[in-house]
Image 1 (cartoon, rainbow, N blue to C red):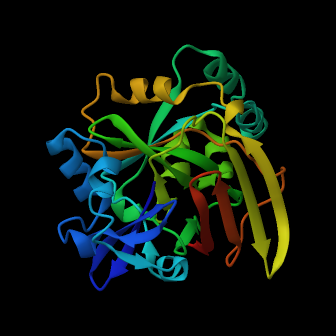
Image 2: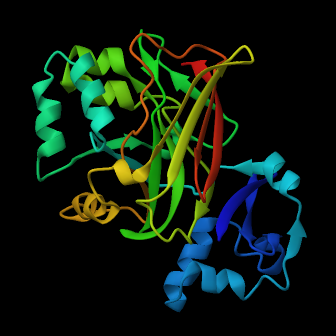
Length: 287
């Protein structure tokens, strides 16, 4: 199933997509107004989120896909977003090219311990069709399309699409500047859904397209099978010896990198799609 949070005045509603259609779960069970509420109910009942949702589908109002697209917002209100770095060969190569200390990225790619870093807070994270940010003090900015692992109390409950916005010029100047290159206003986007029925997260097609003034200026495609780490391994390093929040997303690393010399500009449109989850679209703005 795929879960969407929809705007409802100052609040939200929870919709679920199944093979039979799209349904507003909140009409059947008003307390199920968010994906977090569903996860809490599933935890208390010691059942899966899909089992809880399935019981209420018959009483839920059916929605049109157009209604969902018009009202969708970030699909999960996270407490924290974390990310893994240098998990694809192309990412390792790109980081070596930009960095003043290139050997450190080779060491991370081949090391036993992955790079895990804090990415975003709720106030810095946006959803579908909202603006993502590029820093005004950065000269080289790129989107980073990533599979996001959705975690409830440290356990995997689903997957989403993530855009890990990054300043390559700031990170490349000095690796210690990584927090400034990664964590800033509108630095992360998640959506459009949380998918709970992904059979193999390491066998998904991922595409990214960037448009400027109506013209396609970048497009690329890859697969999550190119990731050198497994989702379970990354989650274990995130969770161990760490007080994890109730709801978190762990981004699994970038798999597509625009060519050197490319940088995002105000008004650019970024579209990231992962098989089985959906297409995340955002417009770029300077922050």
